[in-house]
Length: 200
Image 1 (cartoon, rainbow, N blue to C red):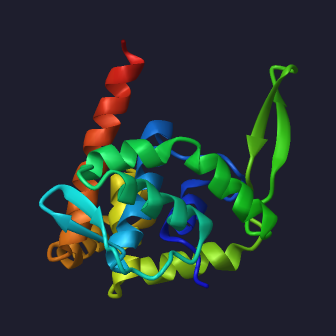
Image 2 (cartoon, rainbow, N blue to C red):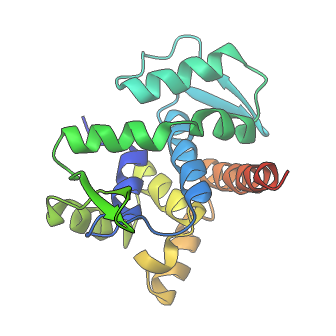
């Protein structure tokens, strides 16, 4: 089984030394968006505008996180993409990190901060994995890699992955990827909603 789009996004979101880049809320929403986008790409979820519905006779999702996401969408067929992102984001990063650590893709190191507080780092264990992801992202063509590129943008990581010229080329490739545009917008709205909740 290939890794989840969300797992590849998470590998890119952490520096080789194990520290996360960018906004935590934005990354969490983009990871949820990656699960949603994977279900759309593989035909398990269909869209009608911004509304989602699970395909009744879809093959069972092969991986636990995808299966949980599909079940969540099936339970609420009128859910919007933004609502799905918000619902799927809770605890997702922690579970995905645990899976990547179990498989030896990332490490899990505890560092003390200010001599008291513990902080986890998740350093890469095999630089070839990140290198392969970056190689595919330079000229994404297949739906899964286009989906990953869309979520890299949604997570605000584009500047760390592509040069300005490469970004223009990737945006052009994504221009006809309707599912990617839908989920990028849903992630952006979910991030705004999450930020608003933290301010109240």
